[in-house]
Image 1: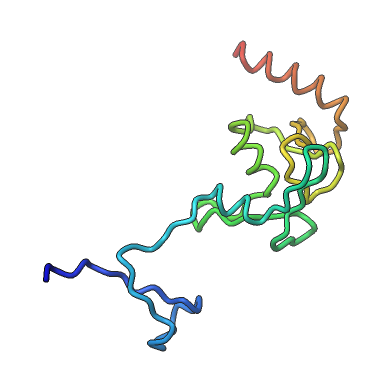
Image 2: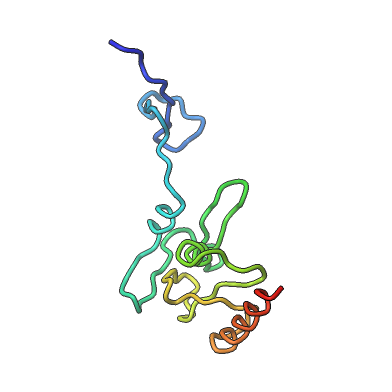
Length: 136
């Protein structure tokens, strides 16, 4: 019999201080969920033109996902934009065409310069902003 692999005890009940042997599991490594898997696991996907609501914790009617201690929580729809379309330009916000603050459908998302802009005002402003940003 060869050497035993180095194992890390994993607490299955979720409590960090738990010492109940029935709640401990030995694994060679702790399985890591990617941000993408965590994000889409909390979204109820529908058709292309339907809203895809965030189904997890929603303080202030805004879906938030934790990105760890270093980064804190992020709005779910903003993270969807970053996963699907790349980084959000500095000083810009991500909004939903449908008006549903919990919607994470990438087809419903667009960029705005300020929180009061509607889709039509925003499209022109964002285009202007990005053209001028490219020149700088």
